[in-house]
Length: 174
Image (cartoon, rainbow, N blue to C red; front, top):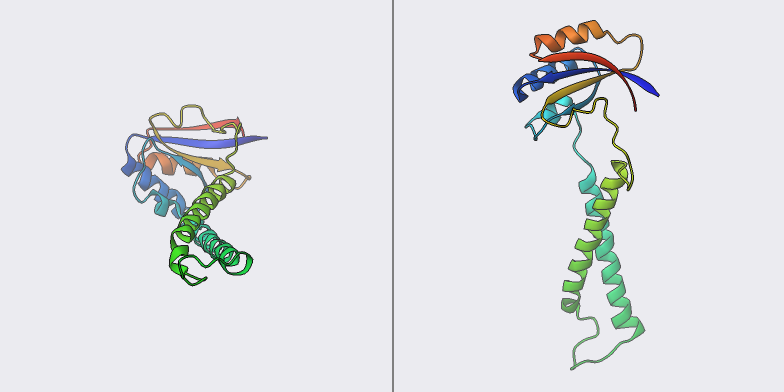
């Protein structure tokens, strides 16, 4: 499927942030923003929501803790109760290191799996960029034309007024 894009390149992050704010104020949908290094407050300027991966980590960690404690309780109390040195069967202090380790392990692995699933990253996936030089050393703002109501002339004028070094329209296959 071929799509039309408006790509604006900038020489510094401040003009990029100004352009993102201007474009959002005029209700143009932003396809993506490319920078050679992280730019502070860019996510807020783009209107991106906070990630929900922390909830995945929390619930997976709670599941790991529950599974670890249930397994330890079952094996030491119900399945094979041994009296070792006169200690009680349900010595929960002995459970703490294993419960902690399984909480961290299951929480961490679930977070990585959720990130890869949500970002649609899998082995062998090819990158899909509107232009090949976007990720090298430029600050770039990419707008995608989805319908006939997209005013590319207005978008180009707004980007140039915001300090764009170059604005071009391309058609690429994604």
